[in-house]
Length: 323
Figure 1 (cartoon, rainbow, N blue to C red):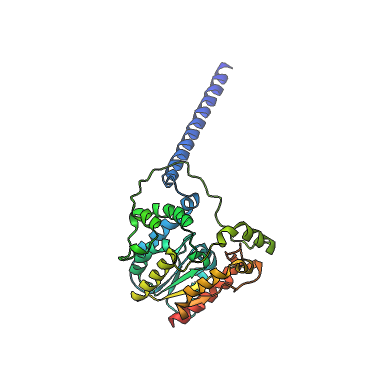
Figure 2 (spheres, helix red, strand yellow):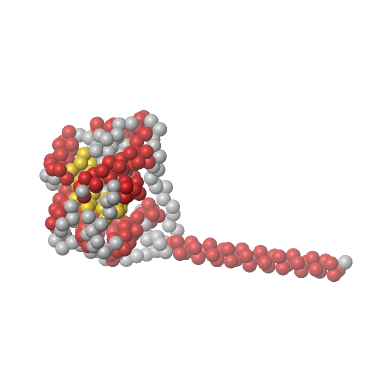
């Protein structure tokens, strides 16, 4: 009996030690993963930028494709571009049309011409066959405070990789240029969290939802398109410089929901048209392309249904421009 109890006790002790070892290993691995993940987070950076490393991936792309072969189309713009342009669908159509060109959607969330200007030299070095610049009214709002607060975070993540196009310095807003040229000291925080604002690209349920969103964001969309804004100057510089480098550009006004379109002031609409009139046949206006709510995930982002409907339109434009 004593021997049996001793064996039982010894077995329990062994099992206990085994589980302690397993738990210890698990904790160690967990901490290592947490530490490794934490090293990817830079303090003072917006959670959304931290989570998807969007701007870092964009610069990685520029580095990988810096071959100057001229067989690619770059689509640039904000999250409206990210939601609205489905590159695989476009590439399928181009392939079926025997057009040997590959389309890349290089959107950046909350992008503005002033921010995109920092990537101009990379685009030139990559020498795409065509650049499709997708825009809307917000690209020319004079909201420097918003623009500056977001750009600081964007540039921190790629600060040591930025190379400016010679002569572009005077076309940045003063705040964005300061963000670009100011050395950034990285400090790491192991407690970086998941972002709760990752876009949901499902169709909205009804037009009432759209109206509610517009009301909520109206302070933003009531901003006035400014023909003298830093963003307008940066936009013109990007277009003109690419054309001078032999890289053609077309401009696409992205679809927005009719309710939002109706809320745009006459002053903004007139100023926007003045900016676009300069570019004549390079400008394609699709603001009113869709009327039904199913095509939108909110008042100015296309749903996946809208994206699949809109992408072939862009494919046809690319075929037309490159034929």
